[in-house]
Image (tube, rainbow, N blue to C red; front, side, top):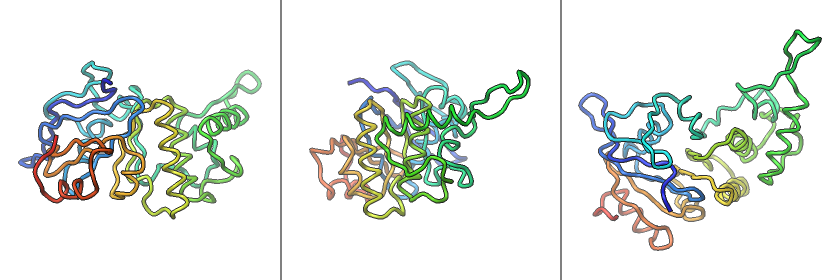
Length: 249
């Protein structure tokens, strides 16, 4: 299967520091690729180039086999690349459906002149996307601050899917969640894979990685040192790559 999003020899420098050095990386539709590495390994920098936060200093980013220029996060969003960071970027004082439409609110005309928020439309659309993903939230009119950590993660994911994400980058999606909420999020990741999304998962939770990933890519000191098929590897092998064993391809 060909990659939906791919990097070829991508490089990023910060002054004299080479943070990412000629990395070849990719993920296909319906695939979960875990991107692992110790702090400072370069994985966050790689993701920020794919998502338009940092410009690359060398190499290329390809989308559907074609070289693309992703200069800003807006460029990434336009290409269907969505990133869900640990803070989720949710407005806790707004309700669920308002967060799904945050920054892209639907309006309607009143009296033929005034533009007002179309709450009914946004509510109905939010119900539809949550039902499609089999996400259960007690009330979409509740403020996000009242939701559990797993439910908040589900709202952030639902927002990305509603706005036609094709590539979903998830940064530590189960961090600080309880066991039941972790399972909820991991089940949702598997569901997204079944919907054909290409998913890049950054996690320090090895159990989560082996639960949902199809491949495991390991970075160390700015280089990709391992590209492993999950079913053909072990936790011990992955950890040895993270801390400094021989490269595996």
